[in-house]
Image (cartoon, helix red, strand yellow):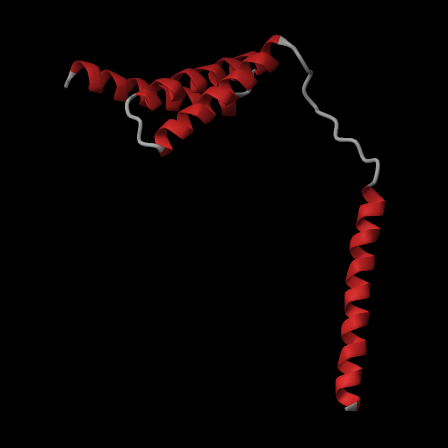
Length: 115
């Protein structure tokens, strides 16, 4: 009986301690604002968001096996990110998106010319 009572007390203490820790973390970050590092509403901002939305539609098409329309959506979205990479002079974005664009261009070419 004493063991059960101690277990119950320890359990209540752990729950209270866990709650206090979470509440403390919430209180600590209350009012914290998230600020972006890139400028808002500039030309590159519109391109990157439009390209991201187009890529998401391409992913939806791919998930639903809507082929070859998904290739065209990916091609446009990746092309948009390649332009953003060039505007930002970001080599990593340029390399990965140029490679992806070339790969998709090869697939689209093979689909329509060789088939």
